[in-house]
Image 1 (cartoon, rainbow, N blue to C red):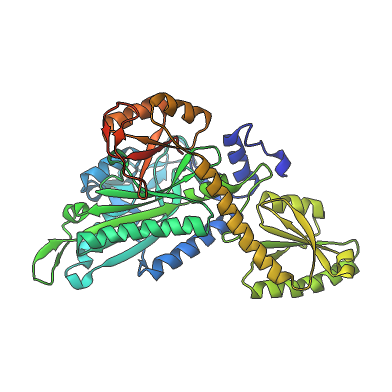
Image 2 (tube, one colour; image 1 turned 60 degrees about the vertical axis):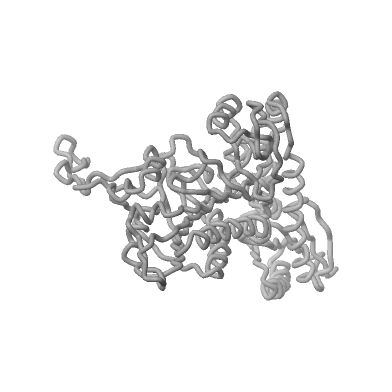
Length: 492
C-alpha cells in the first residue's frame, strides 16, 4: 500500500494529498472545499480533543456551546474583527425553499422568505459570545469567566487542502473575561504555553513560541501569541494562536463590571484556538514514503497484533495467547487491536498498519508459540526483532516511550538544523530557495518592509520568538536600525 505513494522528494504536496486519502484519514466531499473526516482520522482528532480538553479543565476552564449563526449587526460591532473576516464569510439570506414552478421536481429559494437581517455562519465566535457575556457579567464576582467551545467554523476558502485549509473545519475556541489587563495577558500566555506543551509532549512536534507582527495579528487583538512548527519540506505551519484582545470586544458590546471599589469598568479579554489543521501538522512532521508515522501518545491503536496461521486449530491457540497478552497490555494503559480478519493475508495487514502509522506491530505464529516468542516491528525505524513473550508488556511500554521521544528528537534535530541566521538579503533569498526552514534575520519593524519581503520572496514573518535574543542590528532588507531578529519562512 505504502509503495503506491508518491515519494516526498518527488512531489511533497502530492505525497501529502495521497497519504491523507490512502491512510483513510479524510476525503473530499460533495460540498466544494469541505471534507469528510473518516473514522480513523477522527479517532486521532478525538485523542487530541481528549488531551486538550483535560488540560483546559485542569486550568479552570469550562465547556459551553454558542450558536452557529451570528446576526450581521453583531458581527460588525467590532470593526477590525468584521473587516478581517468579511471576505471569508458565508451568509444566510433566506429561510425557506419551495417547489420551482418552472422546473417540476426541483426546488428554489422562496423569494418571500428573505430574512429581516442576514446571518453570518460563524468564521469565529467572538461576536455572539461577547454579546452573550454582556448578560453574564455584572460584578467582579463573575470574573474571571473561563469558557471554551468545541465547534465547527466556516471560512470560505478558494483554495483548499484536506486538514490544512478547508471551508469548514473543526476546532476549539476559548473566550475569557478578566478584571485586569495583567490577568488577561497571563491567560493568553498560559494558553499559548498549553498549546506548546501539547504539541511537544503529545504530537512530538517541537514549536517556537512567539508573538505575531501587527499585520499578522488576529483581527481585533492587541497581541497575538503563537506556536510555529516546521514541516519536513522546510515550510512553517502555525499550529496554534492565543490572543490578548484588550478591551476591544468589551467596548464593542458594552461588557462592564462593578469593581471591588464600586466603579464601572470594561472587562479585559482573550481568545485562543487550535483546529483540525493540527492533523496536517502531525502528518507532515513525522510521516515517510511508506505512510503515516504516528506518535504513540496520539495513535488510535498503539499496538496491533497480527496472527499468522494455516489452520483453525493454530488460530485458536494463538488467539488464546493473544487474549492474555491484550489484557496485560491494556492493564498498562496500552491501546491494542487484534487484527484477526480472515479477508486479508498477514502481508496485506502489515502493509495497511504500516501505511496507517501504528507505532508497534506484534506478529505471532505457531512457531512463535512453540518458542515462546513474538516478532516486534517498530513503525518509526521499520526495524524488527524477535523477543520473548514473557514480560513483553513491560518491553512494549518502554518501546512506546522510546518511540515518542525518538520522534520528538528527530523533529527537533531537523528544526534546529533548519534555523539559519542571515545578515544580507542575497543570503536570505539563497537560503530560502536552497535550504528552506526558518530564517533568523533583522527587520526594521515596518509593515512596508514586511510586505515587500513577502512580495519578493513569499516568505512571511512567522513570529518574534519569545526566547529570542534581543540584539540590535541592521534590517536585512532596508539596512535601517533593527531592535531584534525575527523568524521568516514560507508557510502553509
